[in-house]
Length: 508
Image (cartoon, rainbow, N blue to C red; front, top):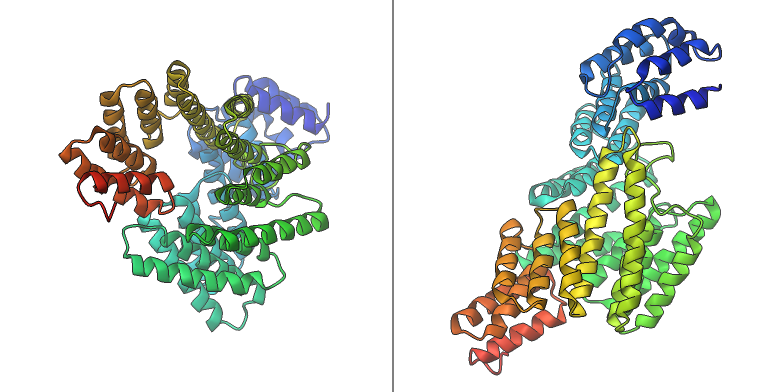
């Protein structure tokens, strides 16, 4: 039996039959002498799935002290005893405990990327903070830290990301050791942070416009340069244009980003990480210009070209414990929305059903892995979104029974979320139960006061009831919703009808 076969044995047994697995390791002469020498103590004391990380660290340090690489030891230790991404994160951090930042900067940055790949953003943040305290001119560390705060989300982290991005650009300008590529990386991180902060409704509109304008200037200059940052710059530029309602410019930049991504793919032979999001954005932009058939053609062409690629490729290397990206699911959900726009409900339901089946199968597959907790969480979130799309599609076709069953499935995956209660309200409204719909919308807003779909739906419901008090509340809800989604035509229509019913005919 070869080494690869033994790794399979250990992974499958995952601590349940650890003795047999370690005896197999000890019996193979090709394996390092270290593992054969330590077979007996491993057999007696090696931590199982429920034992503490401290015990795993002791064995990890024992293996490392004998000269084996951190990566190979980490994989063996995790295969034998670690059961989740948290264990992987603990071992990644333990490997750095005896390595100074200044002399092992690349190891620290690599570890930060590994932590990001498995969704351990808080640990990555702490690690990168330590890096920047010791190495203030590390452009890559600044860019990674900005990305970490953006992924953590929330107003506090978004503002912190903007502060760090500005500090990174200033540090790059002060240092003469920073390359042009690193300067571009920091400027791109600044543009992304500006664009994210510009979406915050808690800051004045003038500041949001100023941030968006500054981000556009940075992205335009970055997109003009031929390099690795060209594609993400064009993609971010298309998003900012779309948010500003400049659909023609957004389509142009999305098309340029797709062409650049395809050119890079031909050179490298691998699909870029932004190809699917660019295609989805381009399809949505085309549909906003009433070019639904053209949008469907783009989606179908992308789905055909990606038929040989895994729908659930992970971040990082294929062997890493990265999070699934769910590219095909993104495209399938967009396609379903486009089919609903042209009244092809059966086609949309078929596409969403296929997406649901793919996610369910993938989730069962990832559940069998030893380091898949974060990956399964991502897949559960994606599956909940597909169930939500199915519920809304059935509700739009006046099929409340099927819609309610879909919402129940969504609640099992994501019980306490604004999206779940909003879907429950839409289904109740489709069934004619206005009281239950109103309560569900209010619960959604209690969970997330800025959830625009719930604001729009509750405002529309109160507007239709026609009561003087309800009309006033409806106008306020719709006004708030349009701050988050300023280009929602149904929101503007309902606000106009509410103001007209209040007696403000001209304003309405």
